[in-house]
Amino acid sequence: MSTEAEQQLLHDARNGNAEEVKQLLDTMDKGEISFDINCKGRSKSNMGWTPLHLACYFGHAVVVEDLLKAGADVNVLNDMGDTPLHRAAFTGRKEVVMLLLQHNADTSIVNGSGETAKEVTHDKDIRNMLEAVERTQERKLEELLLGAAREGEVGKLTALLNKPKPPDINCTDQMGNTPLHCAAYRAHKHCALKLLKNGADAKIRNKNDQTPLDLAQGAEMKLILAGKTGKVINKPLRRYEGLLWKSSRFFGWKLYWIVLEHGVLSWYRRQADAVNNDHRQGCKHLTQAVCTIKSTDSCFFSVRCFDDTVHRFKIPKNSLPSQTRESWLEAIEEHSAYSTHYCTQEQLSSDDEDDAVSVTDLQDTLKKAQACQQRLSKEISDFLAMVKSLDATKGMSSPLLQKVDVVSEISQETCEALADCLNLFTKQEGVRNLKLEHEQEKNKILSEALETLATEHHELEQSLVKGSPPLSILSEEQFYDAVSDSESEKSLSGFETAAAYSLEDSMDSKDTITPSMSEEKVCGSGESLSNGIKKHRTSLPSPMFSRNDFSIWSILRKCIGMELSKITMPVIFNEPLSFLQRLTEYMEHTYLIHKASSLSSTTERMQ
Image (cartoon, rainbow, N blue to C red; front, side, top):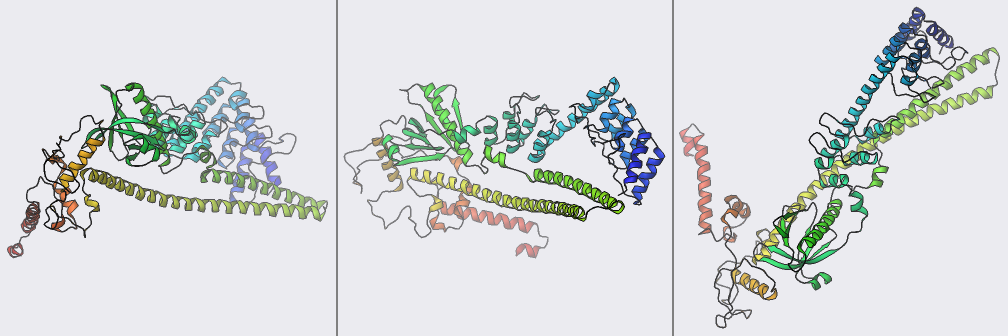
């Protein structure tokens, strides 16, 4: 590296010798000579200034343009912290200022006195020019911030917010959406947390009069924006219980002891059963549960669960309906938030968010370290060259030269180690992404299995009410015909069992409001049954099923893989086996007719 060429470049840039500067740059470009274009002067007249600083200060626009085209750093700092833009603005060089701005000079850099280029200039036109550029650069940063929030780029978002002069965190786009709005409707939870921690306002409304909470996607995002994340995690969840009327599909309204505990809604016949956790009549997880009320009825409210099942409740009339219902709604909301938080895929925690470091942040940090290391290596190489030149002329001690060689080697090894570290972190991020994909696939499978389990659980509940096993758990080896000669005449039929079950319920619970079943009389005389109950049936034990609940496809789906003799058919179809046979024949006949009509040969049609 030629020190003489650097001194010549500094001299020519100061004096505006454009031809000499161009020749030096062309020589460097051809590789005939090597020097640092951002070198700093060491003499009294240019101490700490680069060629670009000197050319800008003295207003040599042609030299400035040649230096910038050759790769000079437009934001290089001198020993006082001034950029070339500071020096050009201070001396009022409008043409040079415009040239620097065209090459993306940063107007937000402050010098050693804490002043920007706009603050050091005395020219009004230059000040207006710099203010316009500042607004443009601020808007660019705001666009980058909005884009990072939309795409969920946490590393880029963090880097923008950590700038010495960060963009406005509450900036808006054309729709009036802030970065928090963008993160909310894109469901980027980590971006929303980062924005809120840096002071984003969650109450700002866009042009459609919507807050980020109105645009939030998912229960977790709503909890984050509502400020309930910490509440869900840290607040102890209280047990809530009391008497409520609960609606049943077949038996109408019945009084139960309802218990809310750990995000689960359970109901018992008596309070003693709830205390001992015995004879629980049913339960439901409140994950993503939603409560609805009727404005016309102060006692009524319903709970819709994650599987779209609806449970209806009423407040007993002996209590204050409005206040009691409000207490129940608040308790259900707390338990729903608790259950939703702990049943989701990702656990949101402020500690985890603080400790999370993206690979982008690591790459930026390592790149800065590499840049510093390269500068250090270059300075050491320059120093080593100077020492060797002095050694050749005046002579120097060999231990000093050996020490310089050792420092240079260590610097190079450090740079290589940093590069290896970056590669390792990149590979680790790839492995983490692969594991994340596997975990997402597992969660998807588990969610589908949970939905299937909820459906089977619902069928099981209905079968217990009806008194017969559901089709999904019916064994192929064990089949009991509806009318069997081998059964005892005293055995209970399905309808009689359901009737007896209904009778026992009506005797045990005297708080039933209006059961949907018809009353049954227990007579003193009649046929003696195996369980000792003597009664005559006056009506069917349950209302007739709606014909809209049955369809051809639901019947066929439940009959797949079963023998005709083992298929349970609804009573509404007369001669069910004949119906299925006719249905199968019609479908087969239709299929053959359509297939034959598509053939052109009569022989193939007959076949």
